[in-house]
Image 1 (cartoon, rainbow, N blue to C red):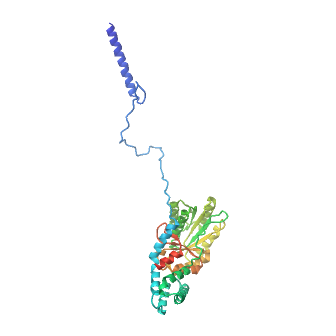
Image 2 (image 1 turned 60 degrees about the vertical axis):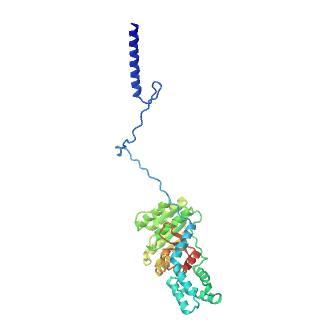
Image 3 (image 1 turned 30 degrees about the horizontal axis):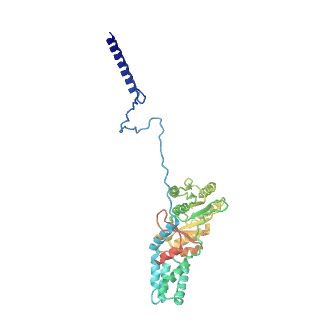
Length: 374
């Protein structure tokens, strides 16, 4: 009888343990009889639904733009010398070949004059240079000294003592205000973007004003230049009064404590008196908030005498303080540097030497003359 009793109790205990084990197995992660039951990991190839559930907000992750670090001035000047040597060496080689002749007769001097005039040096500067060369080579030296004499005289002609610093700093807490003017096609808007890169490389804070409001492409182009280096661009709807955009740009520069505000203006045709008057209005409106510290005239170096006509008209309207010569690497007529400086009485401050974003450099007279001589 006792054996049967023990058998019944054993069966009951076994049944209880079996039921208990089943319940724990159904609740993974809980502690059971001294062991942890861990659910297996999901299979690797689990499909993820590609559609957003109804009512759920999409998650849009926008990566931060990577700002470009513009090139510094030192490396720009190295490239300036290289590019100029490639495009301007023909003038210097031609002059040296003539000056190195055993006999410098009148025909030779006429050829020298023709070479200089062809390079757009201008009539008056050409006559001065030839007269100085004749005197020095007759009195002081021989044709063997032609290179050093020519270098000194060309350097004097270019003007090594002219102040070529960009006036990009204001006074009394105001930002420096740079007004950039020029006709369509001269590279004006691109030049504004490239100047901003020079200033950013010098750790200056910059605001750009897109006041060329009649060309939507110019506004978009300037916005792109600003985005690449983290510079704010003030713009308005297409057709907005350019003076109002320029005013707002300077206002923004004052409010944010920017170092420099650069205002891009619409390309003006020199025979459109009304448009030129409007350019004068832009300058007057800007100066209600802060003085304009620099007026840069952008000229295409390949236009030659036509560029000088443009220069005269712009200087009458807005009092140009400096010149930017673009496409100098695409022109063999480097003498335009001398002539435009004589015409306006202001220095060439920057030169463009290519299509790259940092292909704008401060004008270096010594580097320019060395490039002329090859």
